[in-house]
Amino acid sequence: MSLEKIISITGKPGLYEIIAQSKGGIIVESLIDKKRTPISATHNVSVLDNIAIYTYEEEMPLKLIFKTIFEKEEGKECISHKESANKLTAYFSEVLPNYDDERVYASNIKKVLQWYNLLVQNNFDFASISEDEETKTETEA
Image (cartoon, rainbow, N blue to C red; front, side):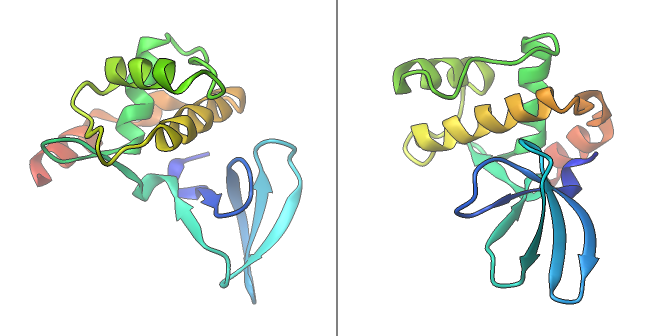
């Protein structure tokens, strides 16, 4: 499982892994209940590998934030996305101190933490996010 194959679908809870391509779109499997679903081109999807969070300097790729949380939590789940907005923003400030709090809302933080916990529950290999990717991202800015 890699972040290039993990997507979020607008209007549907959780995350989905791309399993196959079909004539009319793609076949995905929910990371929550493992049910497979066809997704057509009319659905609005976001690939986790392409998502970034605003900071005051640049956009930080979501995969690097996941890796930071993974290292902070030593491979375990982080706080629940159901905590209060104040707790969520305080936690996220520890993970990404320079995030742009005017453009990153509590709802965004809630999604990031929920997605991270879902990936941990599905044994995602955060160590596979290599140093080369981090260096490449930093030099592009």
